[in-house]
Image: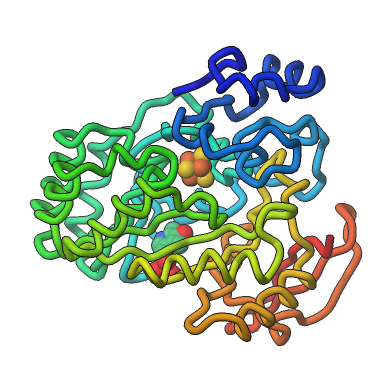
Length: 340
Ligand SMILES: *Cc1c(COP(=O)(O)O)cnc(C)c1O
Ligand code: SF4
């Protein structure tokens, strides 16, 4: 893991501006860290879509009136310290606090930045008692920061508690550190089917040939791979870019799953694509590719995921924070998301 400017590839290290350097050194919530592999995909230009995803940006320090420490309202659905139970038949286990590298747009930055280690013991009793849960999302952080023995032990415990439960491994490591997904790891994962993988991929250039190989192997090993993408300003907010990404994913046998409107985590406002523009991009995307992902947002404040389309917008208002859209869910409840 690269966590200082001096360890970056020379061309990238030379591209660091004094402003960025100051910011990296006085890092706020989320540390600067990138894998050598992901750094090798970046070019030195300030607007490079790979570089921008891991280079701290001075704009992270600008206060955002809309920012929330718990943007998804997960604490409202916390069943145990590491377990979130929001939807009846599936639960989310926050199994790791670290990642192979850190995405500047991360919505879990507050969770990751806390140094409390995972408390894996507390969830078992809850899962045992709640037999309506049929699927456990194993997320974090990135669970692939654990070694294979640790992961196998965790999956084994989940199956001891709830035989037959579907496992969903949520990870970005196949992109940031494709070597982590070697034959031994894929074999281990395939041994825990029914298991599928949800991989976070934002830009076609992230699908380097080692990543393609590793993900293609997963699919061949019977591990379905679905792709989650975060809509990011200046990175993938063009229909052609997203269409290229999802076409490549389909070619590899992976299915586009979610395109997420940005969550309101602190220090990420400069990545936000205005919702109105997001809807226009999504409309165009539907014309360019078959089987586009669902465009969705996790409603700020704990309302859960909602599919985004014109009819969800019930109006606009100006609050103390600024201009907002009113989003109406299927139960008729109103939620708010910034207009810009
Ligand atoms: C996103 C999420 C899930 C999974 O939802 P899907 O629509 O099945 O991807 C489950 N639990 C929580 C808390 C989530 O945020
Ligand atoms: S891999 Fe996921 S959890 Fe880790 S920094 Fe990136 S967005 Fe956050």
